[in-house]
Length: 121
Image (cartoon, rainbow, N blue to C red):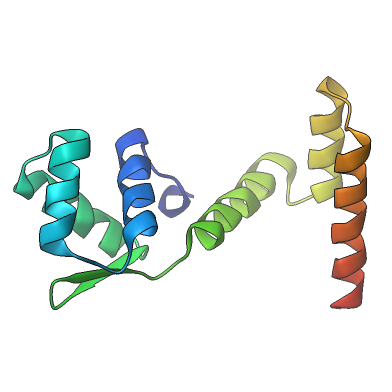
């Protein structure tokens, strides 16, 4: 599951890239200096780490996302349900709703998602 998890600063850095991608590395270094007070080497070290994990690519000085933010967090959610609830989405929902009630709007949204899923089978 490690590849689907980001540490706090990795997450902030990834969010910055997703917000600005594609972005030139020089511009990314400037943004990281402004937002995180990072040196150039820190930015490149973090970028290399996230590129090795398959989130981004840095080709010819341009950083691009290999996974969208939604794809990454979707994978992270799937892995959480797999690890914690044996892959059972109903078990996850049951555990989630034990501590809080769903609003009518949330129930309708979940029902809409279920209906869409049935249509795409």
